[in-house]
Image (cartoon, rainbow, N blue to C red; front, side, top):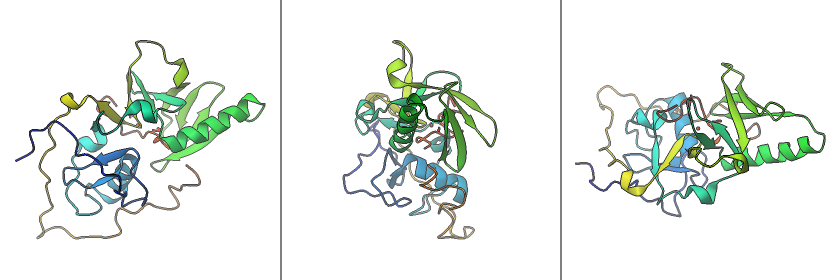
Length: 227
């Protein structure tokens, strides 16, 4: 039976994301209790199928569409950066720290006479961030989102979370479901299925936002349509 405790399993300090081999950021735990960076998990699901990279438990569809994390596990105000992108229909998402840092460096250069745009890669998609129009454009499908600095968010505007991962009060978190595993009689294991396509996604190019992707939450991160 699934636990009645409305809380995402806590993430231990020593946990390492099996995709990027770094500390999970932002961390996300599957029903099988394996923890990854949220965007690494989405990348694995998009490129290698809806299975946990470690145990092959099936990844629920909501992980791509409406993932949530408890504010007890992930304190958004401690992770908030300088840049945000708009949700598909409303609200704002923070970019991942890596993308945020790149945008801030590029923004400061723009303020001093540098180029007005920068490209970032998130989940295998390239996005152009234009500081002149304050927009984010996906080069593969033309989707446009507004961007803004977090200091410019007006009172009353909704801040959803980070890169498509919605941060919610602990008491509002749904109980995690039981893990589901593939039928061993029909499933063929491919140990390399989840690994990144180096030509499509590289750390050098990267974000998003983590940053968000076009598969973010139910309403919808980039850079991660909501994300």
